[in-house]
Length: 186
Image 1 (cartoon, rainbow, N blue to C red):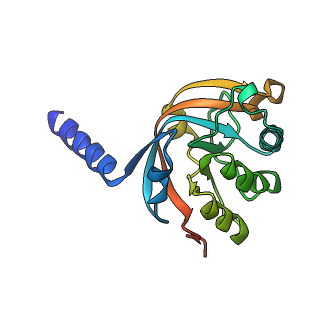
Image 2: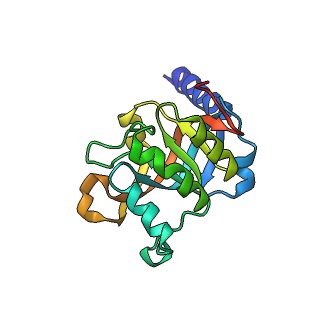
Image 3: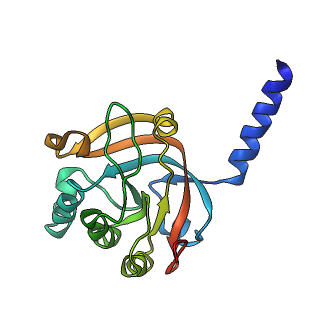
């Protein structure tokens, strides 16, 4: 029994040591040296949003109303997901409403977008222009739920599971998929 605990503990330590740890919100420098294919563990406070809420967040930004709604995107991460009782899992980031929000939200201060799927080359260029990156996460709802410490609705509660949420997370695994004008999907 003691042996398996040691092996298990050693495996966990080695696994975690292989991954770069990033705590959100971040400063621009922390994101600027990420490279495509790099494995990361995400912790800290992140936002969640998808098709219904992201266009609304873009509108708030364009109208200069993010602060009045209690939304601070500087150094943030937006996870392309809904939040339900079953947990969270990535949705396709190349859905029109989501991908159309990526450039503007990067300009607004979002430094990492987290989802799944390939992005258009123009979106990848805009990520680079605004010093942001895109990371993909496998659809592992149970794993992510176990690493989600708290959830709260920040804006648009009428959208239910598609409202803008803030999560406290600890150790979300992801891989940098677009950085420095390059994509792992090319």
